[in-house]
Length: 173
Figure: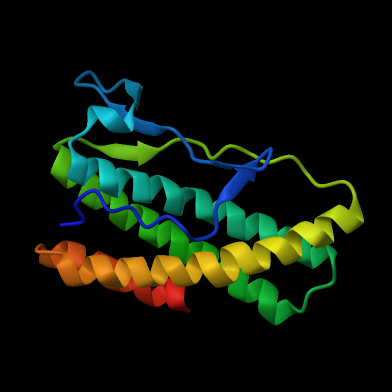
């Protein structure tokens, strides 16, 4: 399976400059929602849950990027591609949480993604967009694709190999 290797480079959400992940949620026997710490899980479900949290947060990151670039006059084709990327991240999150839940023996899901503050200064926004295009788009997504492909090669479980192959292909795209 995935072991404890986490490949969360991708496109994160940052709040005050720090990568922010949603909380991990589960339900008790009575159906009450509970926040769960990743370290309360065994390594394999914790790895899949952490990856699921990162993928879930990437949905917001891509939608936020699309909104910011739309305000900067980006071409429609780029905005459409960002929306497709958000849908891919949602699919990755669902698949990761499916595997995490199977390995944990209970349902696991992401809570709400923390919302970053809106950039008010146009020059600061453009500088951040350029920095994040390189850091998150070029380096992060390429690293995520590479790590997912490497994890796929090591995975013993056919279901895990399939999820990792999908993530690797989408991240490389």
